[in-house]
Image 1 (cartoon, rainbow, N blue to C red):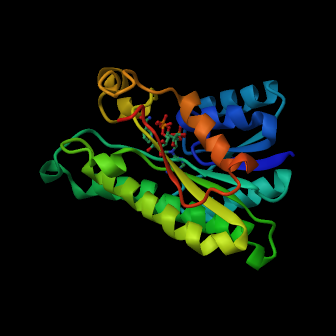
Image 2: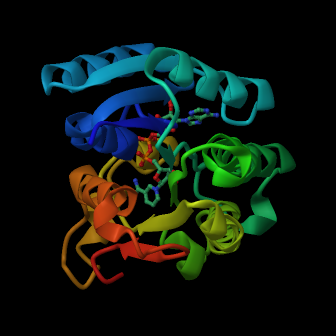
Length: 247
Ligand code: NAP
């Protein structure tokens, strides 16, 4: 069945891989913050794979942008069936004692407030209690939520711990309203996020220490996301799925 899928931060990294894997499922809304060229490439690749796609700029920290993102998707494709709450950031590695407040606010605004605003809007648009047809939400958390990321990103780790709590709680709220809510917790995945944290080679360097002996790929995370969105996981909700090579 053709589905309407909305992915925050869908233009590159894990979000792009999810968009490409979903292209066989139907219509994809590719949200981005600033990187338009990566977005255009993702849209072109979804279309080349036979799917439909639109690009929508919007900051997940801004309530109006999040609402506009869902509105634009509905206008283009109809009601949203699947929501991938993926946009997220890290900041340069640091001990907590050296972190400034502005950095922590940026991380919590994007990863926590952004995830909550996206999930809230998805709930409003999907709940059968509100006359909608149900749906599936996948939050992109991180193995950092249980590892804590000491001396690197304890702010980021805490933000992802909150995403786990959101997942567990919202699954209970929305289960009776035909909306499933799950999370994936990627480990070390080879994307540009590590460069933004000041360590472009972090996934390669630390990935070899994982029990599976390598970093993960964006496609491997996307496979889990798409499984959690799909009817193949119809009895799964409130799950936190580690995609971390055993780390
Ligand atoms: P990435 O390649 O750096 O991509 C980040 C994405 O988030 C980009 O699409 C970016 O858009 C978007 N974004 C950032 N801030 C935004 C905002 N305020 N509003 C809208 N979009 C925003 O990172 P990634 O590795 O694919 O990460 C995706 C998710 O996986 C994140 O939640 C991250 O925490 C999580 N994760 C990643 C790893 C890993 O090792 N890579 C591990 C665990 C969890 P622009 O391109 O426009 O900036």
